[in-house]
Image (cartoon, rainbow, N blue to C red):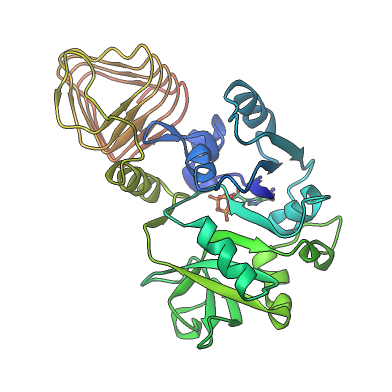
Length: 325
Ligand code: GTP
């Protein structure tokens, strides 16, 4: 069985760091969020297709340099963004029946083996993982019957129009026949234009109660990082040599942080320097960035090779690659 992963978005809500690094390669809890997404796939899924667009060359180079032995990956590049449906159609040739469809920016604890079992047991055309949230406005919302069959699906409804609190979690199993239902050669939103028309063919919800976060904004990305650490999916989380404070801290190679203070919930990329007296908490500091002496960085994402000045305080800030802050 194969998985198709949608990786073509611009990541506008994470600018300016996404001008340099595609969202999927931002490291959280020690590795790119994309690799946490791939961790969900059970052995039964033995290869993956990436539908890439924005910064496809950067993603392809990273995947080539960091292969997953159990999961050979091929990439299909969109010359122009085709949206979630167009990207699926464009990359889906020969995907197999059924296949797993993944958003690349959703950090979740979903049992995909159980999802596949439910899909088969119900002879479903599609089975979408659903997660329960209070505020449904940014998401696609499903109405379910007593058998968890989806009777209506509304993308980003006003609260009064939301049929439930169960939202599309960005993980699903679909019959290969879904591809023929997507108009070719133009941008298509799978959730808005395609899913509602598929419901009569038998689309079911799979209610997931594990943790879930859409890591598409800075605050949610950092919350996703803390969820991964708390779930033990962030590595050992030890403090850098000579540093004080509280883990977990996921460390790249060659980190220098003597005399700095940390924690909790920090990822430091390769070659990061955190000078003495600096304090970093609930943040991501990417490869080659420098945090000056006495600076305080909390709730922030610091792009690759960025420099945070001595004594600066950054709270809830996204710093672009190679920028001075
Ligand atoms: P924002 O610009 O911040 O909204 O982020 P985004 O561009 O990633 O959009 P969104 O979070 O809505 O995307 C959901 C998923 O679909 C992500 O995994 C995206 O990478 C992916 N995606 C969005 N648009 C496209 C597209 O045009 N083509 C492909 N292949 N994937 C897409």
